[in-house]
Amino acid sequence: MKWKLTLRYLLSTVLVALIVVQINIIIAISISVMISLDSQKNDYSGFNNVEKFVRDFNVNIFNNTNNISNVFINDKGKDVLKKATAWIQILDNDGKVIYQYNTPGKIRDKYTPVQLINTYKYSGVEGNESTVMAAEKNINNYSYTYLIGFPMTKVDKINITTDSDSIWDIISKVMLSIIVVDVIVATIIGYIFSKSLTKPVKSIIGGVEDLAGGNYESYYKEKGIYKPVFNKLNNLADTLKDNERERKKIESMRNEWVANISHDIKTPLASIKGYAELMFSDYDIEVDEVAQYAEIIDSKANYIKELVDDLNLTMKLKDGYSNISREEKNIVSLVRGCIIDILNDPKYSHIDIDFDSEEDNIVLKIDELLMKRVINNIIYNSIIHNNENVSIKINIILDKKTHIIIEDNGKGISEEDLKYIFERYYRGTNTGHAHKGSGLGMAISRDIVKAHNGDIKVESKLGTGTKIEIIL
Image (cartoon, rainbow, N blue to C red; front, side, top):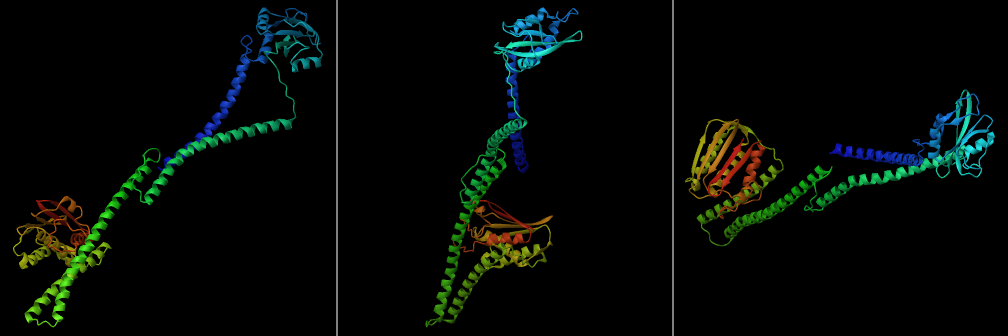
């Protein structure tokens, strides 16, 4: 777009220059045409220039004898003069008229050199309204001077006599006038061109100001040289609008999450505080009751600790947590160990978990504790968010990369929940009331996998179960 803008600017500059030059040329041609048309009004037998007409008339002058006084014009010459309503006088070297044709009644028959000059220079010959032009004809080595007069209504002379300084003054004024006119024309044309360039820029600046002010509803027609800019401006407005909508949604989710976390922390704290006060009271408590109360307090404290640990870990991962102690571990053994630990818990011993791996030994450089956290979190989600008869299949496939696939046949996840499955603070609508989590589990799992330069994918539909694939 930059070169297009530069090209348009150069083009506008060149066009301004060309238009100004053309205007000057048109003015000059117009003046020439006007002069030419004025001359053509006096079309004398095909001649459109009076002086040329007079010079070329000498072909009609003859003298067939040795007597210089026997000069005459032929019939063609007479016809030409009649058509031009002109007259002619032919003079010898002494200025005496030796032949004339179609002359007015009052006219000289002899001219002194001064009279001849004045007659040629000024219109009007002794009261006769004629403009006289002079030329010569050489016959038999004798030079005749001839005068041809035209009616002043058709041909006239304007004599200008001035000094050289005045001429240069006139020329300078004419040139200055032309320059002033050219500058005015160039300014007007330049303004028109610049307006076509700057008007879209004003729209762009206005669009940027709207975006800065939070107005994302403006739409700009994508046309002209700035079409790509308007396109990007509209796309930016759409992106900012979506981001603002998403920000509000995340803000709402976070507020809801904070409220839930506060409630989840307050509930065990209330139990801890209640049992602690009971144990410190004067109430006679049996030993077995003390042990029972202490177990409840420990359980509630561990729950709060898990919530705090989740918060701490997710903040570290969000900020690019890189303190991962990677060691070479057999991922097959790690996953198998997580399954065994879950099944050894009496609460989950009845769960149907099927494990299969193409390889018995797949060594990866991983953080064992964090990766166990991911596997346990996904398996526990399949157990907790589904019915007791849920079946879970876990497969490990080695294909350039290691694929850990955890799939269940449970309730599945709705499309709306699936979009936010990895978002912090989000709790799905199918989360049971009995399950009180931090809402950070899947976000933490994703961040741990990403920290291992891996990827995690989720596929799910309501009523058909959920499939989660970890790629390392």
